Image (cartoon, rainbow over all chains, first blue to last red; front, side, top):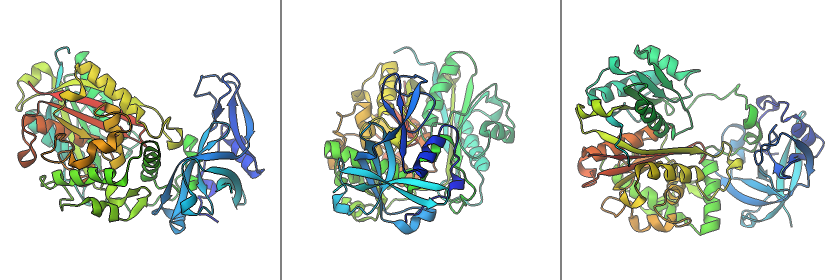
Length: 136
Length: 381
């Protein structure tokens, strides 16, 4: 299992609660703006694209592509033992972008544009995280 | 260009490098005292205070009290390493509005000596809560993500990134205050260990302690200053995002595009007019993206622009002439040192590293994770 931060270090709030609760259920929840239809991540009360305050929660497909990535060779705390590991920005097919770890990714197959899919890992009793794997 | 209304009249560093026996207040006192002396002024003349830092709940309150000053104007704008270019712009605006006459801008950090600090008990709040679970070392990992994307879109190479580090080290060799002065080669950079691919150790800035101070005053007082006034001709600032996943385009430093455009417009100048450039170099990729954003070269052409040691001593584009954050010092937020070096270059005080005939200088700060940009253009009579 990848290193992680304890849930107690992540201050969930009323913007983020549906996201964290979704992860526990195996759902990657993001928002969509009712006004401009753009996908929004991370969750918030205002659409950063058109400033509407009408946003709905949707369940993302979990499919996307690597927008950019890095292989970390130095990391801190509970992550130090994992190096080297891949952190990527994932462009979800709905259009929003999010950071995640790529699991079990052979270095030579990690490229910008590669297709990925979400995988949920329960890292603590009350914390599930969305990681990604390369699609075959 | 309208006649400039404010000028830098004093600059100084504090002790730099490793200062385990000093506090951030002592470092800022030391730099402020020296900068005021450089200006021919004293603490009693200061009526506006600008500082940025995370070392206190309200840094301006603590620092002003410690120094015994009671500013009638205060600004603790913190947009990361570019804060001090923003402070300078704000100070000029305040002076032009007649709100105060003598602005003191300070910075101090003991981040190197504090390195063993324990993060235990820290809670990632609000919009910070979505990224730390993935272990990205920050800020280097975020700049690595930008570098990967820049390489993907434009074919930028590790060798081109290394050109920046090598050229900057050559300048550092001529600065006795620089921490790293041994010459390095492109191979040395490429053979240094990975930190976060595609960035090697020598693509990364130093981690040092240190502080700096800048004194800004009215045109009238500047004309009677001890040293040659360095006029603030233009200023621009912008920020576009906070978390790296929210950066609009990881291959374009959009904050610098906006800040550079506004600074050049205010100054009535173009990139071709710049004699010496001090460009925030947290990482080598930062420089390449900033040069493109400011219009020194086209989009995607930054790698080619810095090739063949263009920015090295004797090259056609003198840049980061103190040795930069990569080789001189980098105490967390480096922006104040850009102003100090640009001022010294225009005054002609730089000895072996002096850029001959420098009349117009540009200093550009970048903060956060390519989040903010602030550009200032400086000139002398």
